[in-house]
Structure formats: structure tokens, C-alpha cells
Length: 246
Image (cartoon, rainbow, N blue to C red; front, side, top):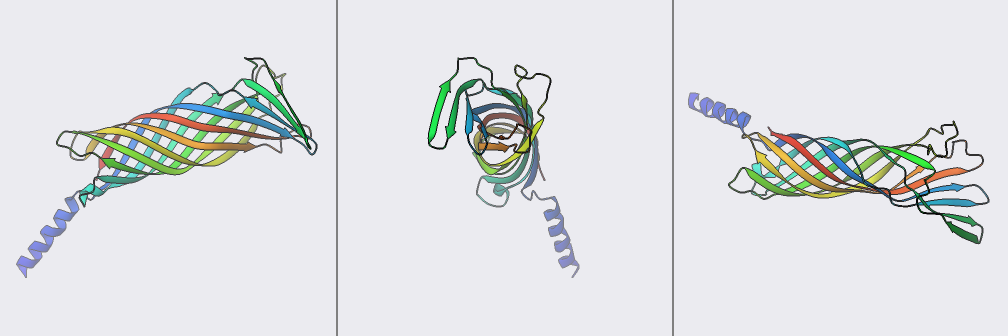
């Protein structure tokens, strides 16, 4: 009986100190972001006017993320990881230049090209929060460096604070605010450096595509017009972080 109790105690002690596969990570970096194919549509019961914009210049702004995951190589021969990650990207402003104005009223439509360099009517200030499920494949080797590939899918909540371009602002602020939830996917690569048995540094690149985002401001005072804004939002994310294995 004493031997059985001793074996049981040793077994539970081993399990308590064993690497169970769970880990957590924290990363920070920059996002090189694009705001493409953007349009502002003003419409009432009679006519729809669409402002078409040039693609905005890429803008760099900070990001930070936290994740909890599981490393399957700790319990099997599969060098894969899965995690749930939250990412916050700080506010960034886009003010693309106007390219063309089109009109639609019943069966009648027309468009007018505008001169190059014409300022857009609105400034867009975005803040984003993403919740992603990520999968990784680690290329295990005998060194302290472990390259990996990643894919992810989830949802991004985007808050857009929209106001008149200062060029057209005559002392009145519109103060438009709306949010959009968008399906998001990502693909990337990186390398982890093993510092200790439980700690690794993580250098990562990821392409993130939030698809077409849409904002509606029908309650704003624009006469009898409703305003709908659309754009494609993508980014190249670069980050450096730390991973702790329990």
C-alpha cells in the first residue's frame, strides 16, 4: 500500500510539472495599411451620387495583440499550434483623393472625371479590434530557431470616425461615427527563438484582409441624403513578441 501511494504521488507530481502544451503570447508591432476602392454614396428617393476615390497611400500605425493557444507537439508528433488571438490597432487617418463623381436617377446615369489631386470630401479615422482563430505549423529542428507558417480567420470590428476634409470645412464638424463588423482572414510566416524551456521570442509577418467594410450614416444632417461609405481594408502586419509555455 505504501509503495502504491508513493508511485501515485510521484505520478501526480510529474503531471503537475509537465509541459501540458498550453501557452500565452503578447506581441506588438506596426501595420502597413491600405484603404482601397473607397466610395461615398449620397442618396435620396430621386438620385444617387457616388464619389469615387483613388487608392489611399499606405499608412503605418501600431498594433498590439494577446493570445492563448495550445502546442500539439507536446502531446503528439504533430508540429502544429492553434490559438485564439485578440488584436487592437490604433487610430489611423485616410483622406483619399477624389477620382470621379457618378450620378444615377432612374434609368439615367452619368459620370464626371475630376482633375488629379482633387481632395476627397471626407477624412476617415479608423480603430480596429480583431478576434482571430490562428493555426500554425512549426518546422522543428535541433537549433534554437523554429520557423513557422500561419493562417487565420475571424472577425474585425472597425470604428470609423468620419468628418469633412478641412479643405471643405467651413467651421462645422459633422462628427459621423459608425462601426462595421467584417470577416477577416490572414496568412503569414515567422520565426521563434527559444530563450528557455518555457520562454520564446517571436518575430512575425502577416498579411491581413478585412474585405469590404461599410459604414452607414443615415441619421446625420445631410439634408435629405443618406450617406454610405465603403472601402477595402488590408494590411501587412509586422510584430515582435514573447511566448510563454506553461
